[in-house]
Structures are given as C-alpha cells and as structure tokens.
Length: 133
Image 1 (spheres, rainbow, N blue to C red):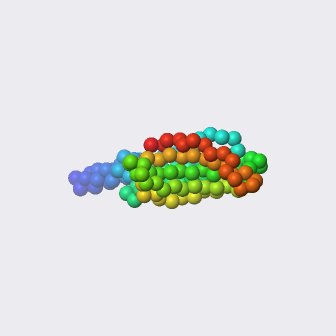
Image 2: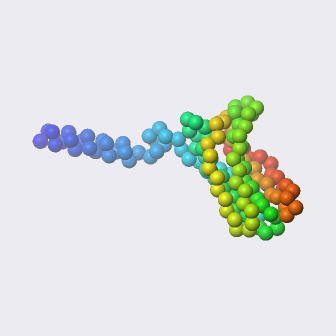
Image 3: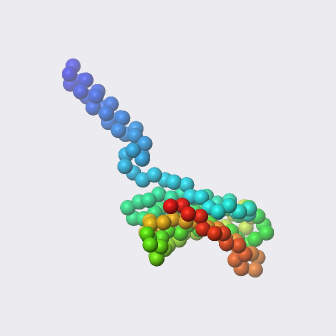
C-alpha cells in the first residue's frame, strides 16, 4: 500500500513539473516585435534571446499599391553599438506578405524600422528607429 502511495505521489510530481509554463522551466520567452507605424505596410515579428544570439522573425505585408515595395527591418547590436547585424523582410506588390527568420549574434540592443521603395527603385521613405530593448 505504501509503495502505491509513493508511486502516485511521484507520478503527480512529474506531471506537475511537466505542466509548468516554458518561462518557469528556465527557457527563454518569445516576445513580439513592434515597428514604427505607417500606412501602406502591415508588419509583425517575434524575438527570443538564445545562447547563440537573438532569434528573430520579421514579416512585412504591403497594403498599398502606390509604392513598389515595403520593408520591415530589425537591427541587433552589441552592447556598445559598434557592431550590428540586421534581418529584413521585403514585400513587393499590394497584398504580398514575406516573413524571414534568422538568429543574429548580437544581443546588446534591438531596434526596428521600416522603409518604402517607389516605382523608380528609390527609397522614398525611411522611418526612425523604434527601440525594443
């Protein structure tokens, strides 16, 4: 009888540990990226810090036909800002949605921005940076 109780207690403990949220188990949490707001683009993304850097997913959807392309970009830098790497998604054509995922090695700071390319292939708009962390 005592053996059955101890097995039941052990089973309940294993079940309770496996039911913990990922953040409580020590793993990194996925966060949403935010981008500067502008009409003509719908953008989204996520990031999670890992042992190898920051894993990013960046998506851009073109919602206007008045430009040739729209882009959403995330920039990761080292702590001093002297080194950087970026990941961008470029959508070309109204309704086009593009997503890209990659891990960037710098984790000191993360910021985002957007830009548009006009029908002559010239950058017609670039937002300021939006600080994520």
